[in-house]
Each structure stands twice: as C-alpha cells, then as structure tokens.
Image 1: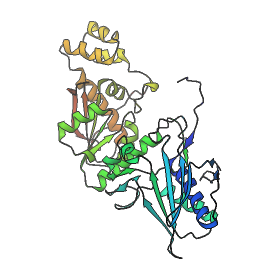
Image 2: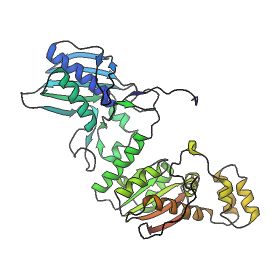
Image 3: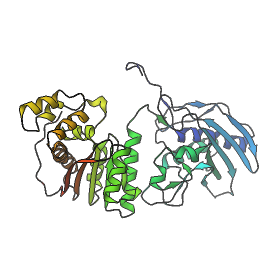
Length: 366
C-alpha cells in the first residue's frame, strides 16, 4: 500500500446493526423502511446506510446492512448484518437476542455476564438511542444476526475468550479506523480480564502462533491463559501492571525479543529494525561482534552465535526481562522471558523472578 495514501474509514458492526435496527423499528411502527437510514454516532457524526434487505417477517420487521470496514483488514468487511425487531408488551423495555452468527458469552471477565448475547454495551447504547429517535421508551426485542458469522468467528479470538457460536457486535464510536492498534490492544485486555475472572494464575503473551504453541507446550497452559499480544507487548504489560496476575511469561521469536531487549515495547517493523551492532556487542570478541553486526537478519546473527558456542538467546532474554520488568513494576508478578526460533525450539530464557522486588534498571530507550 502507498505510504502517502489516505486510508478510508469504515463502520463498525455495531453501527451497521444500529442502522438496520432503526430501519426495522421504523417499519414496525410506521409501515415503511427508511432507505437510506441515518443514525447518530456517539461522536455526533450522522452517516446514512443503504439497506441490503428490508422485509416484514412473522411477528416483526427485518432490515439488513452490508458492513463496510473501509480500508481496514476486518474479517467482517462485506458481511451482511441483519436485525429483526419484534414488539414486546408495554413496559417490557428493550431486549437483545443473538441470532445466527452472533456469539453467546460463556466465561466471566467480559463486559457482559455469561449467558448474554455478545452484543457489547457500546452498540446496545447506540441501538437504544436510535430506536428512541423513532419512538420514546421502545418496548422491543432486537435480534442481531451476521451471515456466515460462525465461520468468520473462527478467524477471531472469540473462542479463546469464551464467546461461542459466532461473532461479537462491537464498536464504541461506530467508526473503524484503518489499521488501528486499538482493537487489538482491547482484545489483549479482554483476554487478561477473562483469565483473571477464571482464577488463572499464569498467563503467557506471545508474538505469534509459533511462539504461542511452543510456550503452551513448555508450561502446559490452557488456551484461556494464552494472550495473543502480537507486537503490542507494552499494551499487555501496562495492563497487567494495573490488573496483575501472579505469573507472566513473555514469549517470542528471536527478532521480536531482540527489539524488546533493546527497549522497544511496540515490536512492529514500522517502529524500526533490531540493532545488529548492539546485538553483536553483547558477546565477547571483536571478530564475532563484527560478524553479527554484518548479518542480514537477527536469525542469521543467532546462527553465528550458536556456531561460536555463545548463548546469545540468554543474553537477549535477560535484557528483555529488564525492559518488561520496568513496564510491569511495581506489580507483584513473577516474570519470565522465553525466546524461540521459527521451529519452536527454545534458544533463550530468563527464568521467573519477582518484578516488585527487583531494582529498577537504567535502560537506554531507542
């Protein structure tokens, strides 16, 4: 993608569901579907949505909107969001129901209790406000469905969080910001919340699938203890500082863990590459340091160090521990760092030590 291109924003699942719900409720009360239908977002924006379906159904009205996530690689981009609204007795209020493709919460620690449809508080509030524009004090059942949602949910973290049967209806602002890290960091936070609520005493954050599988095997951890932190090690550690868990393992590949060791809490490539010269300086001997500094990749640098019989992985893990500990301090947490190669072989480790009892180490930030 061109660096200078302005990325197009899109609409959250919650915003699409709100538009469909308002159109269906208007048809239920007044006999006609507004098309396009305009809603007001929490920030004051008033987008209009075209309806993909609009029909009367037994006992209610159904409207549907095709989700447009803009230029964000959202798994629900292009999905059909369907909402059926049915009247309830006066005074019953507003009730939400998970239709096909929308999940149900089965574990504690999420914004809604187990047994509730996975329609988050933000979208619920937007839908309520939209229906109140049609008629004050709405008494209705709002059933949200997502076409093919159960299959799409397999590409998300819902199963690990205990959201079964489909996708979640998400979105606090109604707007999708392309390539925003906010959604990923929010999923990290929810993973920590679920683990804490279930009494999990040891969680492991991993940079990718290979390190996740390796650390799960190393410690025999259940899926709920695995936090898919990706590049956002800082987002995970800072949340754990405020919401501590007794034991935390940070696991990753050689390149990502080298960046962490060099003081970076955002490990994405756009934040810069690992400093190979600094990596070489960790080992004895000018010749070896020069060979590592001249390596094409961190993986090659590790190969050079291994051939020379030098434990580069342990040196990286020790420095990564210090960086991570500074982010976690003063949480009463035991921290471990584990470094894996691409095959899942452990090539470096800094064993568990308590962050709160460790002195703060001066770190050179890059």
